[in-house]
Length: 420
Image (cartoon, rainbow, N blue to C red; front, side, top):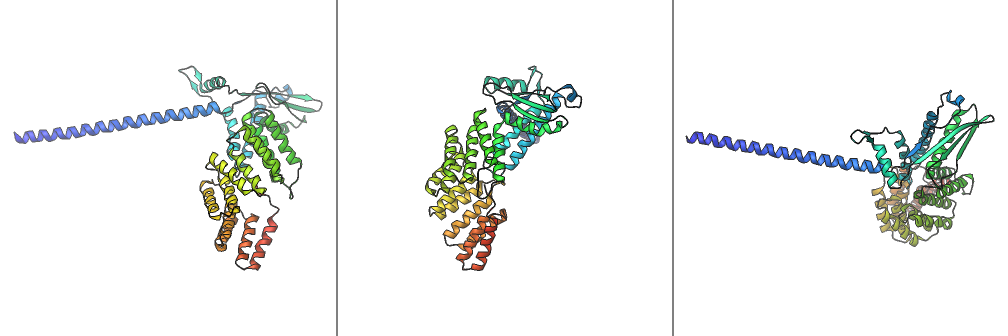
């Protein structure tokens, strides 16, 4: 009898343990499911908010003459080709900007066109679609879409593409592209640029700035490329969206600064900050201009403001390091160079930081360690003249005049190369 009771008791204990384990597993599964559903809901909300905030560009089918349509260039085909060309320009601008502090703004140019290429998501229960809902919310929030309409017409022996922004008041003037009648394909590259200018004028400011900087002469001078920057900036500032105006002023000022006119550049940075007090890029460039005016104390304040607005702004840490070095604080300068390297992404211009770090080490009478930093700078950019120049000074500190002259001559041979 006792044996039977013992067996029964053991069985009950095992059953109780199994039940507890099963209950525990069920609870874990429920919690995992709930957490997964919450995560999915949060993800859906984030995606939905992003879709609502994303600039939506609606390009109607272009009106085309019947003879052109018969060649396969229907209104829908022409609209899609123009959008594709604009997308190509946006990609190019984004790629050119990877080493610049405005690379995030340039990368966002490409997002404009993704919304026009995405298939809509139907919601059968609500008998509507995600795009319809997002458009309704955008309208309620005052975030209107951009509507583009246009036509191709014959004029004498030419064909003329006209594009218009139909989005409301203060829209930019119509864009016209004229080509020979038998060169329809040539309409699309220029038409794509016109479309981008109508819908995102900031893109053309960035593009004009890159063209200017790439072909900057030595000594710098105002030329047609600089005029293009000015025209693109004024166009961007005069027409919507106003959210782009601050960066337009910033790049305009930066172009002026490259012409060795830091005082005039500062005025543009101030205009940029008046529009957007949180424009860290403008504060950083303002610091650069003050540094060029041999005012490291004021430059330091602008760099610190840029960092306060964007703690991951590697270029501002580099500028702050330079200002501190000139203020005879090389140890503090090195700390800023280290911070720049810690927050920099893979596209950062590392040669600047390593060269500044080397200069700070020279100020600490550590020429051997300085040379190691200059070598790292050259490893990152073999054409960086300032690194060779610093290396030559460090070699002179080590009483090695022949080697120093060799590095200095190398620096001189590279001095025409522009850095920006």
